[in-house]
Image (cartoon, rainbow, N blue to C red; front, top):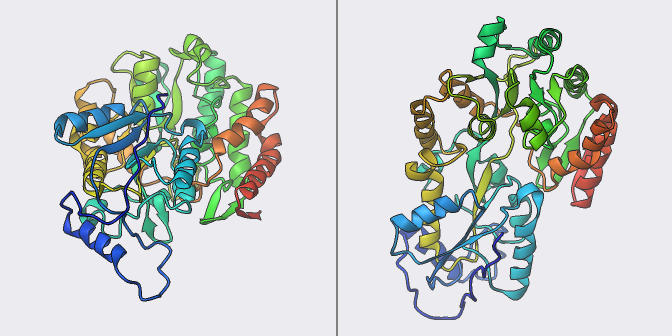
Length: 452
């Protein structure tokens, strides 16, 4: 990670604005400078700082560096300071820590920042770091372009405080060649999925129907299975239930397949997994980015083998549900003295076909860009079927009962369940401990917890 200066002191004294602002932004600035007549301002009223212009400071992770560099290339007249950081990967809280420092010193905030986390609004709004985007900064016709529900993690009391970069909706990846060779049918229900796992263990030992070895395992399986372990019901309220029927039946399915060794307990990113299983995957439920990042790049599966199907569903459930693994968000600083350049960049980086449609590694959250992205996947001739329909359908099926709390579910799973799994314990037996850990983390972050 490169630690660079994140911007100089922003002058807030009197003086002339140095940039011409769009009418909507200028109106916000004028409103912010007006006399309130002694009436208390609404908590989410945005009062921009003096617009002095200058360099546009953008923070990105290494993956999004290409986006910032492309924008700079296409807009050479815009002076930019591009800073790379860890993107808050694995819930590092680096951004929150730095913002806390900048708030104390009164300077240093980046104008626009990317985070690999979907829960930054849970603290950034309270810290008065992120600007409200649907209060005049961005036109509604632009905001209407996002997939249904995509920006839900960014909404706080009806105000939008960030934009989703990409979606990580889960689907069922499978090897079409092996399916055809062995005469298996792609499962549409979890019962069928489990039956194939049992059949595979008997007929083709060593092959897999998935992996349960990553910290995002619950986001693939338990989220998709409507396990209410993480139901965010308000800005600081959560309902936790890990032992309901929806949780135990999915945990039991996982235990069965772990026991017969058709579900690996190794991380898909580990050298162990790549060495032993890269060419032995019959099926694997996982996010949209598995196709390129895992099968094509990491596992080097030849073209024409990997296909996509909808996630299996429980028999009798007429409301399809999928999980979500990752994605990311873009935040615009409420302290930006360069709102015109900041909003231009924010709009471009989240909607541009040049980046989101043609270069982005993940499925874009912006629906028109997603169509371009899918068209490019088709022209690559890598996949054995048309992946567009299942991915587009899944984009609108992410179960809303699993929220984005300030606490990291992946970190909780890693500390609570993963060690027991490695020691041979069943997931079902650890569901109560998982619940206790979630409750404790939520309370430590100031959440009111309702336990079921």
